[in-house]
Length: 289
Length: 249
Image (cartoon, rainbow over all chains, first blue to last red; front, top):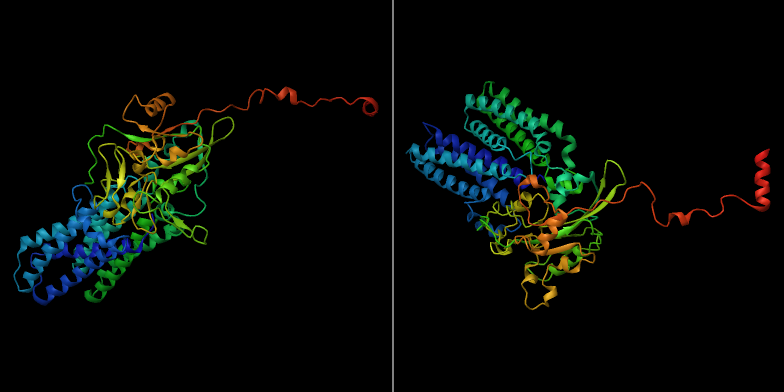
């Protein structure tokens, strides 16, 4: 799949933002006054920045409000509702915290909605049977664990962040290992795509058009896969191992910030691979993956 | 609403005969010709003769070679457009309700005024039947020529999809696949019509008729072959004497 900058930025930034909102909502002794203001400002900047980036992916963004209408059937619509509700509830929670009033149940509700939003984002990809690498429970699991990891780093929870870095790093490694086998496991081949398998071995002889088209640009992105193995190692080092070491050093504010920067850079690389490595079954019609 | 209809009695669709398709692309041209002037935003066609042409098509003809265990390879032309699936994965993913399947005849359509151009329906389609129009920024797909098949202003013989109307090999057939008595259903039953990617669970309405087996290499290649054998195997006259003499040396 084509790794669009808008979606990579969106999933990474809003994941961090909603992850931070989860931790702020669950905190039994939440920050108040100016400290609360700074924490919530960071969370909203990330979440809203991500959502703004996602609107760049739409060809007709002026109609974006229509995306709220199909929440009963569409994960994309549910994501829009989740984001709106999570940000509204947490805005009320934050406003009360500014005046020193902590309504904890409101925070729990906001945390649950924030998690649900990240889950809905992941389900947009996980629901697609056409992309076997994504069509798996591990897609929402990875999105959720990375959001919680980033949120823990942002809110300065050293122990939680350290544990989550190990969990999300291990999960990411397994997702790559298992993901490589999912296309074959799905059983879709050129034989089943054309129905010609019973007569022999089909082979794509020539494409229907001499140039490229929307399908090839959007769903048969094969350019960047050459360096995939190296990028996987880089991503894992940046998103899990390096932050884990940095967190154990003294001066938590300095090294904590470095850990956050490293983790974010690693997640960006991992998200790029998430799209660039994903093979859509339509590529089979063109003799590619 | 983007929910799929529970059941549609009528299932309008195409039956494509892979045995007779000659790969002329006339259906592609007829489709583009009709759909750049009728239903919805015209199919764009930017810089067709320039360095970087772009545009959208609703119908494309692939070409495959099938190599059997023994015998010669077979060349198959493979037209592909929307299959108007009964369990269309492109419909429920749509966040705006622009993508829908009609209960009355099973045609899958896009309400272009509600399309935000997110492209998720094209991701959900395993067949590559949907293309984003590069100019209009909305999703385009085969409408089964919904503006022809019910169009009283057209002569009756023209009330079928443009691709079917134009096919010179009669490789494309249009009809109601929900009615077992219809000509297309009979054709599918008789020729063993198949679904594309059945494992994707989309239950496509359009069916493909597999190519018939071809003759093998074995035996005579042609009934005229005996008449094509060389007439003078043995040289006669002076050349014959020379041939025999040289052979004795």
